[in-house]
Length: 384
Ligand code: MG
Image (cartoon, rainbow, N blue to C red; front, top):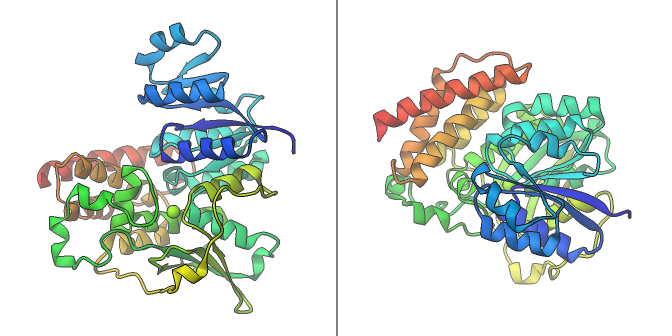
């Protein structure tokens, strides 16, 4: 395998750090060409020292100090220059490890430059997945998902005929609140939520996992990545997180992808695809797991998933609205401004107030996104 040159967008976050772990483990298969971050300069400089990237993008305020300390690195403005960075000729793979809708611009730029894109970010696919996939086809860009569920589906579909696929089954660990009765949900604190049982992740996605909004986003993400109708995407709660998702074919055969719950596995698969590289972790030991359970998700307890399914069925600009309202609500919850249960109220109010429209271009999507943020902040002011 020739040495693949990687740009990691959001390198100081949870996925970014796991990506660097994979690079370290697979040495010398990869070269870190570029790193980007916002404000975590201490960690970024530690990674610059170890991986020696040629290009680094950070928030503007940090540029002068960094330029004086690292003479051989080319620094860029993370708010301005990401589109140019991902389009560079000496970048082969773009890992989208940043959270939120800010990933949309660089995602599209990478796709249009024909790069291999490994998205861990789901917001961009939720907002504009149809456009991204269409552009990827047009520009010969390969998208290999890093999100563990989508990676599982991607792996199960390898070598299969698309027309033989009956449905995909996303597994959900159920989040940290699975066994807390719904009438206690309003008392749930930020600390309660950030204790996620199965996967170690950033704060935003951990909150979304607790409400199951994350699973709702993944329903839409799966629709876009694999070209599915809403009826072809099911969710099953599987707290042990051994099966990372499944695929059912027209003959009734079900394929599942299993493994230890470690994000390094799907990240490494995306980076080495179509090959596999020896893993860093011990083998999955099914005899210590003993039980594997599956149950239907409780849509009364987790209304966010029900709302997301409604949005997934309608499409248009609604997914972008759902995503934007959720970003506003989760941020307010993390800042202690609203209760856990108020997040859903804000998102639902915003979604129901939206007049759904076509989402044929990015302008229409960004307009819906902007509208939703204003609407959600209005709802937030009334609720807080
Ligand atoms: Mg996931």
